[in-house]
Amino acid sequence: MSSPPNSEQLEDDSPTPERGGISRRKLFGAAGVTAAVVGAAGAGALAGRASAAAESVEIHKPIPFRGARQAGIVTPQQDRMHFCAFDITTDKRDDVVAMLREWTRMAERMAAGHETVPDGAVGLNPYAPPADTGEALGLPASALTLTIGFGPSFFLKDGKDRFGIADRKPAALVDLPKFPNETMDPARCGGDICVQACANDPQVAVHAIRNLARVAFGTTAVRYSQLGFGRTSSTTRDQSTPRNLFGFKDGTRNIKAEDTDKLNQHVWVAPGDGPDWLTGGTYLVARRIRMRIENWDRTALLEQERVIGRHKGSGAPNGYPDEFDELDLDSKNGDGDPLIDVDAHVRLASAEQLGGIEILRRGYNFTDGSDGFGHLDAGLFFLAFVRNPLTQFVPMQAQLAGSDALNEYITHTGSAVFACPPGMRENDSSAYWGSGLFG
Image 1: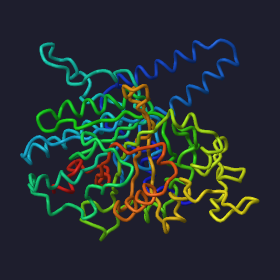
Image 2: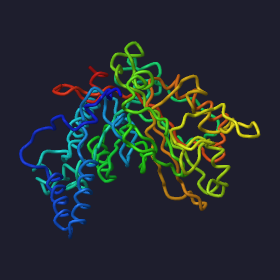
Image 3: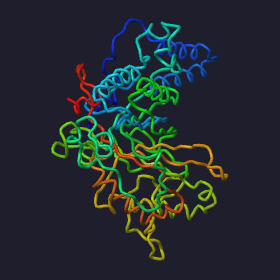
């Protein structure tokens, strides 16, 4: 097994920013674990509590912010997400650079489990707004990762090169074309900058986006945001395959962090692919997919399995017993019909059907209330990282939009694409989000 290309983000062995004493989050987190253990009664209960405490520590430990790649891509996928797209509201380059520097400083502190400012600075002046909104005080880092990307309009908007960087725009960074089976809401599309916050505690993820938006007032404005729960893919081999809101296992064949060769081929931007500042980075494709939950729930199980191409219980390809059995697109039943239907989702999305195209998925379920007509506004916030969206995502989505049996039950309502730079090396105090772009 090859080692992950950015193992520094998968292991907690790098130093965190130094500061005196223990942070409030660590103090309260440690107190909570201690109280849980002390309060257990009996040897069996104590063992159970200790095991639960160990698991809690594991899922709430910090993820290193710095590394060859940005965290939040091949990092073991967390359970919660807050995704936000921002529009720049100024034409002043210096203001944008200052904001990105401040964002970087805050993001590194929050990922380490600290407040956005050093201890003692929160609430120093009772006659001024607090320097940190405070809802994450006492909470552990919860494996928080923050990932930034820059949209096409960041470089050139309405024909205007606002920040003098239009010549650094990657050729592959363009708005996605229109596909069939879309009901796009313009308010949920595009964006100059995106930040993906993932954590195992929703309050930690929300706190991160909230505070970045707060300090950026006057330089950026939130264009749209999306909360997500229940990851719909696995990014390491240690993670089990989760289920989407249709009840099917999702992302069985996803690229994993350990698949170094596949990551280099399908995810990371290579030298010569585009401008130097993006080498080692990737592209992020975001799609908000509304699921017609009620229609699906009234559909017979056999039809659901035909549409997907897998058994609902085991996740195995139709006609096979195990989730990880090979996807045999030539297999047939006793009547000579294909076990995996010609318009089944897994067939049309497979590398075999797409000439070898693969993507790294990192999506989340969402529910946003109802639509006013008695239907849930729920679905999948699809996130994928690719080396080139034009040669990977576009042909994949074109095939799915044209023939996928699943289209009867879904519609795409939001769309965006962003270029995500590589990570920042340790001990490089001059680096900040976007420094390679503006340097």
